[in-house]
Image (tube, rainbow, N blue to C red; front, side, top):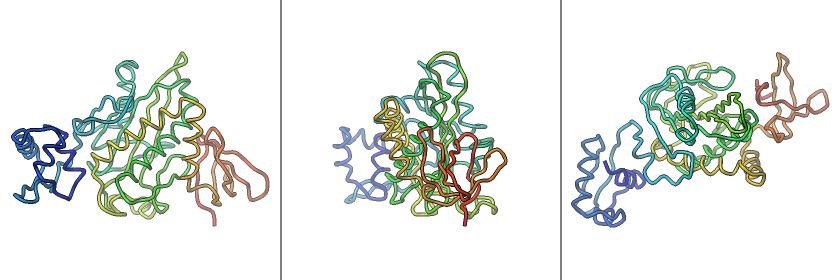
Length: 328
């Protein structure tokens, strides 16, 4: 297949484009464009051809195709290699298996799965997603001193994912500390950064991202239905291929910023501007004890800073604390 043709039609969907214009834009001879369209049709793309209006993409295969995601992707590192699998216990597990093969092969690898049978979230939670309804991806990235990188990488990934969603929709996306993406206070995505102790100054970290894309409300268990949503529940269903491409491009830039002080500061500012937890009165649990107070800031390590109801200020690290409720 020629992914340039399918991507060009995806970007214009549902608008048509004259075949001559498309051929000129892509530098293809008309017969080569016609052959590419025929090949796409054999792969399950439904392309309408009108003698005056031109070509229009009516429907595309549900499955993610690595060729489309990788085609002319504007990245230096993240997404330089892409794998798509139909099902996996967890994309993070596949990413760690790749990381074991070494930095030269695995750094920047993005592994997508259409379905996870044991997808995991923060604090051991399970990620629920019907097949081909979400964007599920894990990225391997080598960083200095991996155990200390979780905070800045979580921030960078959250900002990148929010920007990618907004690039492909009219939605405004916020961050609920520490790792949830929210629209109108309903969770549409989550991030899980995993680091494993190693010897030496450099080592791999796996960044897992899950975005709810096309689910209806019935896809979520009744007990969490009011707190979660998919992007399709707020507007048109997203094109997962275009969203995947945007996510990798945005993540590539965000991760690159984290390597120096000025770039990391820019990431922290962007994350703080999107943080929906700031300024709210919440209850946080740490070590089996609940604390209630107003969120007054995020510390440099991405800990939550609360002005406690009983007085005083306390910091809650992201690794050991979690938000129980928005207090009344």
